[in-house]
Every structure is written in structure tokens, then in C-alpha cells.
Length: 168
Image (cartoon, rainbow, N blue to C red):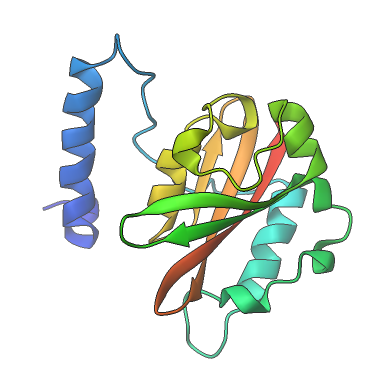
């Protein structure tokens, strides 16, 4: 049993099922990345967001609480930030706050829209899949834009995501 299987047996199964689905439906849909793994090193802007998120953790908690987030603490990055409301059953993600630069790159205002209502393009390519993966751990996506999504705890589950987007 390899390290990934031992650490994440369900993740391996989901990745295998996802690969079969991608192979059988590649003419219908764009291939979703198999992994949203964090790189060894983040850019300075995304690194600042990570450090801020990591500094919000209380005690031994692995995920900070959403009500501790103050976007004003990330001065200079406001145009690159996202706050996403996360709903548990059914799992859905709604854009709460989006920075001006992200809105300009995307070409529309998406505040109040659910991830499944947003066209997956530009800075929000594969956004719904990444948001779903972030419900359990921090994630990273790169394809013309780099995007970091970080989980935030509240109400007994991950109820919000903090995100940052940069042009690659």
C-alpha cells in the first residue's frame, strides 16, 4: 500500500473514478485536474494569504474560524481576494466577496452566484471542483492564473473559503 493510499484511501478511489469519467466524457467536458495539491513554494502574494490564514488558527485547530477573517488585514491584495460561502447538504459554494481584479479578469460580477452557475473560465476555470476539494484541505490551481483556496470553519463544518487569485 503506497503512502497516498494509506493516508487517503477514499481520495485514491475518487481519483480513479474521476479518471474513468474524464476518459469516457472528454468530448463533452473539459478535463478536471486530478489534484489541487499545493506547490512547494507559493508566490509572495499567495504566500501572504497563506501566512495570514495560518496565523488565524486557534490552539491546536487545523482550520481557522471564518469569523476571524478580516480582508482589510491583507492590504494591497484586496483586488485578488475571494470569500466563498460553503453549504454542506447539498454541497454548494456561493460567491460572497470578489476582488475588483478578479471581476475584471473574469469579465462579470459574480457576487451572489453559486459555483455551478458560473462559467468556468479564466480566473475561475475548474473553480467548482477546486472548491469541493477545499472542503477538506487547502488547494491550489494553476492554468494562466494561480488560485489558492483555504477552508474556514464555522457552524460545525467548513462554512466558508478564503481565496486568492493572481495572473501567472
